[in-house]
Picture 1 (cartoon, rainbow, N blue to C red):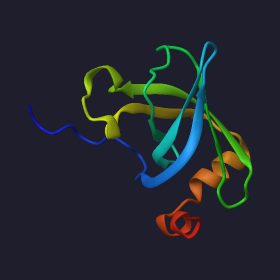
Picture 2: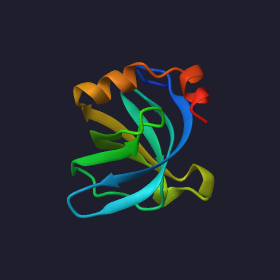
Picture 3: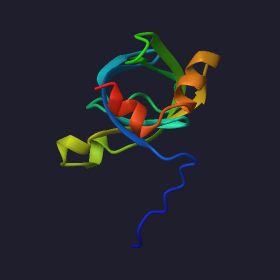
Length: 116
């Protein structure tokens, strides 16, 4: 089996931010481990129901404003990984508000490192 092709339209930036995924039936705590303007890797141990809309909620570390991004589950490795550190879900953003999109589009590794 060959290596899986990376089809992401934007590069990901490594972060370590507490966050929540909210669905119609659950609230899942975890951490954003990397993100881009179009998606994120959310480290967690509970998989949201497939096909349900979800919201990724986290705090902008610079402006301290709460960010809420509408998304969908792109993939999950929760049921089939033994590596606790890489356990989680891939989230694809489906809709963002103007402030959130501006914030997501202006992230750079240098900007994010300055927030630590």
